[in-house]
Length: 191
Image (spheres, rainbow, N blue to C red):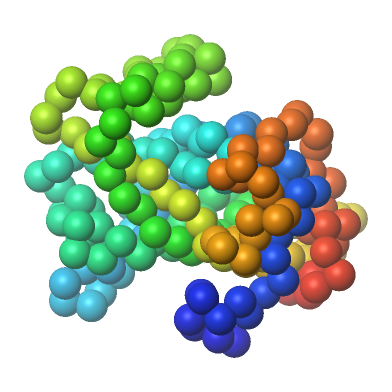
């Protein structure tokens, strides 16, 4: 398997996959993210997120080790699993880059999404200098699903290769359920 994400080791994502994946992301709210520490060891933490399409947003303290790690190396791997689900999509693994969001209008738009989707949770704090809002943009996505006791994975590449499939900034959205990775692509493989 290629480790260089720009060599397009997986097929480009399709609109159908984007629709299914964003539906899954819309229903979940926690992810485990792995970042690279200066000593070479990975650092994994669980954080809350809100998504807009395939872009995921999260908050971290500017004084945290995670923020320092991301400033030094923006590469991130993350995992999201469905709570108590054993059939259909059970999780996603994504690799990409995270960068700080500095635009107050973009943060305000995220607050509106957060309030609508999770009304019982706090919105992002754009006025606090202690917190940073970060945007994760995936380049590779692995969808794990289970159907009748059989698990499978489907892999997709994004970035510049996926522009035709996803359109304007991955913003394809729907409430259609995700029934399984095998239905999204011919390149699914049993696990």
